[in-house]
Structures are given as C-alpha cells and as structure tokens.
Amino acid sequence: MRTLTVVPLLLLPGVPAAAMPSDPPIVQLTPADGEAVPANPAGVTVTFTCPAYLISTPLDRGEHGDYDVLFSDGPALAANGRLASRPYGNVASARLNADGATCTALLDTVDTARSPEIAGGTIHWQVSRTCTGCGGPGREFSPVRSFVVRPAAATGTLTAPKRLYAGYPALLSLSSGATLAGGTVVLERRAGARWRTLDEVAFDIDGTPLIATLPRGRHALRARVGNRVIAQRIVTVLRPGTRGTSTADDGAYRPRRTAPNATLRLRITGGGTRLTGFRASVAVLCPGTGPGENRFVIGFATLRSARVAPDGTVVARTVTGAGTRVQLTGRLRDRRFSGSVTLKLGSCTGTRALAAVRR
Image 1 (tube, rainbow, N blue to C red):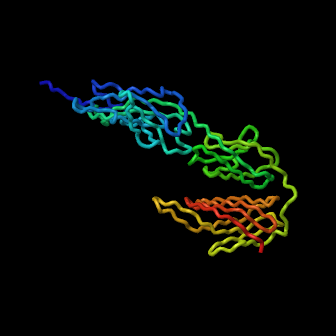
Image 2: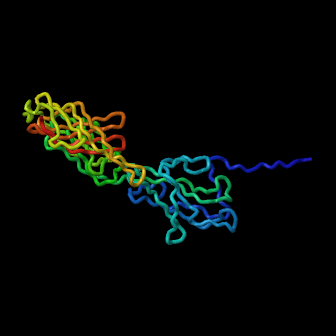
C-alpha cells in the first residue's frame, strides 16, 4: 500500500513573503535607485504606489494606512526580509497623495550634525504593508532601493584675537547658524599637505570656543564638523615682544567685591608671566529629566597654572576623565585681573564673570 507524505511549505529565512496572487505590487517611484538628492532639514521625501490590496481574504482589504517605510544605513536584510539596521528610529508612516494612487513617506530625524537628511550619505529604503495571508512575518516587503543625500552647505565665521603670540594659547571662536547641534567642531592648522588638529569642542549655537597654541608666522586655519568645512581664515602669529606685565603684578588676588559664600582666588608669579593656584566657585545649571526639574548647584573651578601672554592675556583649559572641564579666559593689567571662567561637570554647565585685584 502506498502512502502519501505531505511536506509543509516553509518560508526560508531572508526571503520576503510573497504577495497574495491578485495583489498589485508595490512600486517605488522616487528617488530613482542611486539618485543624488539635496539635503533638507525638513526631511527627504520618497514616493511609491500604495494600491488597495488583499490582506488575507476578499473581505479583509488593505489601504494606504497599512503601508510604511523603513530607512537604513545599509542594505542588509534580517531573517524576516526587512532591513536589518534601524539607526534612524521606527518606520515612517505612509501619507496618501492627492492622486489617490501613490503615497509619500519622510526621512526626518531630530536635527543634529549627524542627521542623514542634513549631513548626507547613502540611505537605503524599503516599503512594507500588512499581509497576514502572505505567510511568514505577516508583512510584504518591497525590494531595497537607495539614494544619496548631498550634504547641506554650512558656513560660519572663525574669529581670532587681534594679537596672537607664538607659544601662548589663544582663544578663537566659531559662530554658525547651520544645524550643527550634537556635532564636534575640529580646529585645524595646515601643515604642508596635511591638516593638523589643534582643538576639538562640542558645537555651541551661541559660539564655540576653540583654543590654539601656534608657532610664529602665517597660518591657514579651518573649523570643520565631520567632513564639512564651516569656516577658514589666515592668522599671523607674532614673536613675543615687549611685555606689558611685570613683577609689579605679582602677588595674591582677591575679588574686587566680596559676595557671600563666593570663592575667588589666584596668584600671579614670575614677573607677571604665570597665573597659579586659581580657584573659583561657579553656579552650574544641571538639566532635569522633566519640566521644572532643572537645578543649580555650586561647583569649584580650579587651575594649577596658566601662562600670561605679553599683553596680559590668559587662556587655559583643563579636562579630566571624570567629565570635568574648566576654561579660563581673562586679562591682567595694572594689578587687576578680569575675565570669565566656565565650569562643566558632566551635563551641568555654568559661567562666572571674574574681577580681582592684587592684595
């Protein structure tokens, strides 16, 4: 007697579920595969057909609301046939166009210096729709296509002091209205055929402070975020000449006006050439996790030593592995020191104006 063996049909890993026999296919329309498109902070749009179709039975029909799009940084597929990498968040919902036959979806992340719709790069995208009658994961997937986002132009201004002295730290600043939040500003000096890094600081929309110590001569500088050059300039660095500070400036300095529970002390030594023993209390703002949860705490900014430039300028920064950063800028003149100090303690940041006199 012959027996009939029934072999179940298995959905192989990595193979998308097939559409129901009578369903019209998903057709990706724009951008064309591999097409270059301009960056857009408001998002990059893709279009595709989104016809009505059978989800499982003739009574269970799908429409545009059953479609979505997944954007990825690579073409690799997961076992269910969907794009494996999701660096840009969840799927984007489909929106029906006025023609009633096509839909759009938007690649739009939180705007930062690394946002793909701003910073550029190759984007892979795939349309899917609910299909419980297709077997497998319960969704039907389109092929994977890609487009290339051209980086958005970003410009800014790199400012420098009127006088820069060889061997002494100088404070520069980058200002830009471009969308660079979350990016790191890299200050570089041209050295032959290469660019040498001088400083790296998180972008600040209110102005990014950059510190550089340069040799004598003319130098080409540039500030970039990622591969985008934001600003460039030429600076002339002078040989240290006649000094404006002297032994008359040496001694201990205290606040010009004493405030309750406030600390400020420093010492000038070496004939007005070095600031030592700096310590100042700073109120820093610590962001909370919800509305009304921000709080101020008092921290202490300390610096062991900093050089005083011939014109009395002081620029110094210290960073510790514990997430503490102190930046001091100021000017020493006629036994008076004025400037500011910025203290960063993890996510907490504060700045204090300084005014001290020799005692």
